[in-house]
Image (tube, rainbow, N blue to C red; front, side):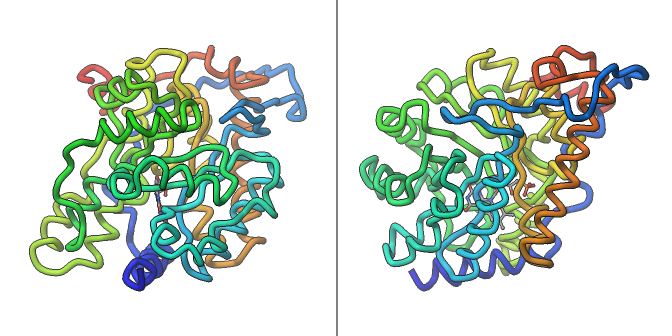
Length: 350
Ligand code: FNR
């Protein structure tokens, strides 16, 4: 458990200041253009971005995705992010609760209900940690923090770059099946920056998974984070795979096409602006997700800096709706969008 806590703080240091978003990686959201409406015939204040997620109402279609917990510093990040989400009516997820499963005393660093009583809060555990904990162990983790749902994270790329990581990925769907039985529509399956493609998404939905976060390529690369900690073979191979993954724009559009209208889809991985959020909504997402930009702002300037970063994102998102002449998410989805360049190739192939 000492090792888990140490690794967590290493990860936070690297994400706060390290080169964890390789510049050549792209979400391919730059291949999506929205069409300007010269006569919006509406007021900014009329924009209504509210939506439903995990049985609760959001004021904005935005999830601050799971990052951390398990150390003092991580606890402060969770509280600031949860407070921000509560203030603005967003959803919030804690990071991997593995540390807390190993040492229940660390549970306090994942507790956010005091600052976030009304918003959807997600617990978090890795697929292969869930094997060890069993479905009851995972249920207890969710209950211990009063979560509305549980995020199960997939991270094969990261594990393979971690010297101490998993090397055997058999039996994953079976674990998901067990968790669906316990959590039902409160389970969310997410990637961590390499993306979920249409084939995996379809299989998960067939097993009863109702919520997916594609978490595609183009933002934080966990292969890169581990590569920066690795030496020898892992460092070399990690460098090679730092750009591995399905770009977020390609993942969300093809997954929506594959699973139909009923699944709730989050698009995360490299979303950095409100316009990015608007674009993923037009590609089929119900909710946009962000981790690194809000984390970095908080690390640099505390809650006020995170508040300002979020204000910029929400202002830009509302502006995108006004300038496309959309009053709400449903109207935005009806608007035409232009898809150019490499994204077109992905959409044709998947
Ligand atoms: C993460 N991410 C993550 N995901 C997860 O399921 N469990 C976790 O414990 C963590 N930890 C974590 C820590 C930090 C500091 C960051 C920045 C990210 C992944 C995160 O939820 C998200 O899927 C990716 O980071 C992609 O989004 P961004 O960062 O590009 O907006």
